[in-house]
Image (tube, rainbow, N blue to C red):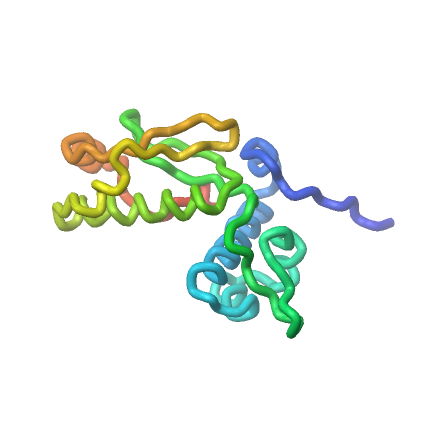
Length: 170
């Protein structure tokens, strides 16, 4: 009897209802596509770096890929794959789900600016994010914390210890 076809998760609840193994594979698959887009590397090389079979990437991440005339895959300029990410808030870090790769990229850039500030005291990269928000899967805007005093408070509380911007790494 054939296995029932799994459906790609469209919400954070759907993703977290799946097994830890699936969640880990999904997250690594989105990393592969992000790597292909950011660095222009091949599907095979990006998949190898993140320990994912390229067929898994094309199966689950197909909507984010385009097949070139030479038969190789390239990442589209943006995608709508679900990503559950961590964002610092005044109350601590919060998980948000987004279906917009551009939002995920903006949040990664913001985390880089936060880490630059926490490590070197350099606020220059934070200025770009003043007044900016990340929009989650429900169109709720989450403001990005750029106040150095607030970031110091969160950092001293251990809230901003950065391991991954992806939530609930399996």
